[in-house]
Image 1 (tube, rainbow, N blue to C red):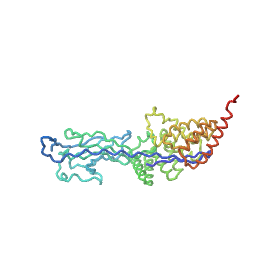
Image 2 (cartoon, rainbow, N blue to C red):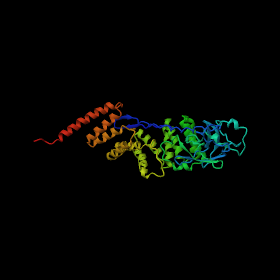
Image 3 (spheres, helix red, strand yellow):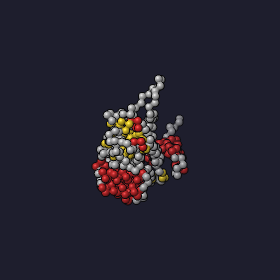
Length: 412
């Protein structure tokens, strides 16, 4: 998935600054496998005798289920893989509801992917359909799920206790690695048919790999199969905007909002485009819709899950504040700007301080304006407009001293 850069343009000749994109943390490494016990029994000594696994301890069947960490439907064509010594030994497909079963040590072993390796050499030609696999052969084996755009937890097989030759491994949890940009989860996504969801997932994977033409094709396929696929319309719009196809991107975003009014990311994208064009009534319309839904009131959130990395509340409030300022709604601009400043924890929008300085100056709050300009220069001392801001700061300080002098009481 791409990281998005939102261009901030202040119409009162303050300058042009670009917000900083937030970094994503890499996934934590999986825990290492359990150390291997000796493959053959050794004669115990009187002081350190160790129990060994009997040859009759066989595992015949592995079963379990796949679940996503956010409760969304599992991807289509999801594979479950048995990996031993970091080599794929067996693969089976999970069912549409996530259940799976894997027959062990039989001629029915599945190798549905060309990347899968052959079974253990000493057992490849001498297996029956019921014997299973000695548990000791699972010492360095793990189970994981495999699907484009998802990362899977791994389950160590040797640590599980078989019951009658069968092992229920429980749930294997998969996590989306390529986030749907800025998502509050669209309810329409759950209604998409499997073919449309499959095309959408392929589009995400292609975009993450930088194959934009291929991603474009898959997203268009997804919305053709399911015209109300708001998430797919949004991703298509994001891709078109990256390719500087502004009109087509705006159309895709509008299709997303028409498909699901509670799906908020396309509203922010439309607000960003209107902001760049100086269409302040449109900026107020789009940001107003987002704020009316009130996604930043975390205590009220239940159906929709907010991804703050993408649907940044600071961006919503900032656009809203600038639009109000340009439309001479100073009190509304101040309220939104202060909320933006409080929510901009990673300082994506240092120019918020310049905006607040403008507002405070108009309200003759020179102390507040001076503090805001100082904060801006501390955050971006080498900004293109830094010299201009320093000149304004000097003038404000002189004006504040003059006002303070005239307000001093007369000494008798």
